[in-house]
Length: 339
Image (cartoon, rainbow, N blue to C red; front, side, top):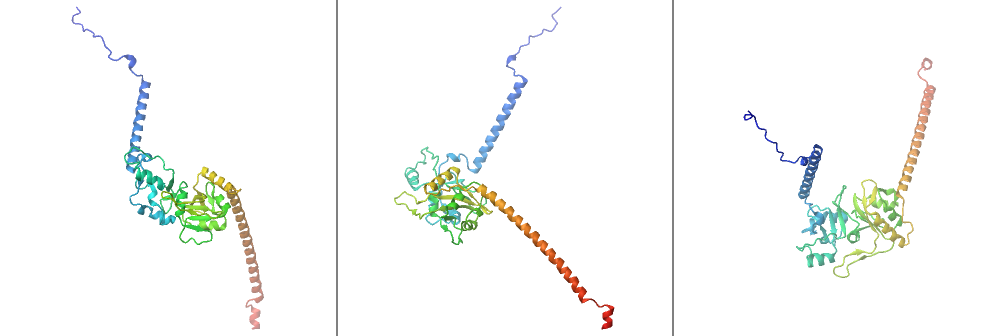
């Protein structure tokens, strides 16, 4: 009798066996999900950091004019010795507060695009590049936050007080005017350039400066500063031979000019009839080190000779003392009897 026997129900598989992933595939899926999760966390962290510092989409932000530039530029004017005509209102940034770069906007662009046309006022137009980077935030120790950039040096230079060879630079003027082509060409090098590589007068000019950026202006002939003749023009200097340098805390300087700009300056020097446009600073360093070794060797030899002379003198003095003692004698018994 099969009525009491349990009836086996047919098993039904709701999933197709071919769709079940294999163990190694499951591992790859989990690894991919973990990587995506990490990337998401990193993106969120980066976004939060940018939002906290106010640098979110700075490269696409509008240029901003400072409402009150006087407090911001006061330390720069004092440090770089800018004149009262320095155009503070023509410097703009892409972020408020501690901006990374300050851009110089020519008076024509500022007047026609920003003020008259209002190109940034809700018209969906963003200025990508103003071409002239004037000041960049320092990443080295300095009394001011910003250093001068080479891009806008011809617009910044005319407003700085000049320091000529032979003057007493009590006010720390940071625009050094020179006429020696060799000194100027020596500045056009990478890395640390020791002040001993320059003429004594120019080296003394730089040696008295505080750490920070300064200008070296090469004037082989008399040059003049061109004032604006028409409305909308800017004050510029005729000579293009002005470069930005950095005074190190040690007895050395650095050139803050790109290699391409250096080559352009050398081409101008050749056009002016100056044939020697290259000074091998690395060779000068090797020669300087050899000279230091020779000087040290001579000093050591002099010290050894001096020590030897002192030893001989001490020996002679000791012998003389013995002779004086024997000649003078002492109170012997014979002397006592004579007395």
